[in-house]
Image 1 (cartoon, rainbow, N blue to C red):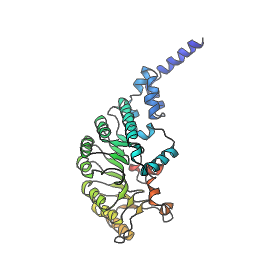
Image 2: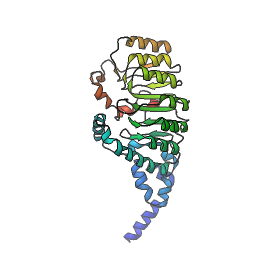
Image 3: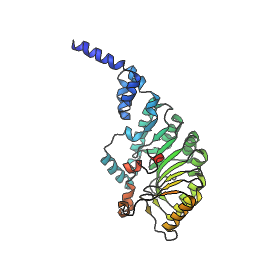
Image 4: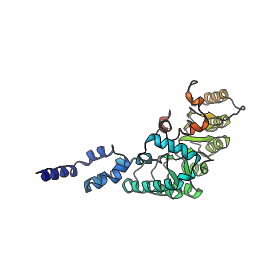
Length: 303
């Protein structure tokens, strides 16, 4: 009798409406879906390929690491980058290949995990497998050549939002020119890293259509920020909350606010009593990977 009841129960799960299964599957993390639920039966396997489940591919959700452990790892990696490079590249590659078996070309949002390391092969595989990406989040640790940038962003013509953590001392250069020449629809940019005048000049030169720009928690120079305001002709909103500033006396904050007012750019600053003002710069780097990195005062730049 128990066996008969068990058989009927399994049968009920097998014949469950795929719409209901999709609702259930959205509650699962990516690994449980791809490695667990999809293997229960053929009906569940087919339901796991539902395009609506794969609108967003977030590799941070594939790797269900305890948040405190993840942040400790990030702090360690800032100093000992090479210790993690090979193992993380292998893990990112494995995760992405497993996901694309289910997602196919459906994703429009691609978030590389904050602990991911990215190389040429991974970036080009992602672009070839997911050509319809509109929002892209790149990790701090990118080891990429011009060729891989050129291939990937030539596929991502629909890209509207780019979120990038970039530090030249930690990783390679970022190819602003290649991205800008291929992605004319790019209007939203979030940049976490060191923003000096040279980086600002590249953003102005190659990302001409930017309307919304967030430098939240970045390490910025005031001349660089001023150049962004005066040089980006379509800029409507700029978030510089929680930033640390280079020591620079040539441009004052009053100069920046005045320029933003004249251009009618909405300028977001943190409050005068914000605790970020007392934190050393190195501690600010750990904002990357935290909830405050995913959140933003500009809603288009949340992920």
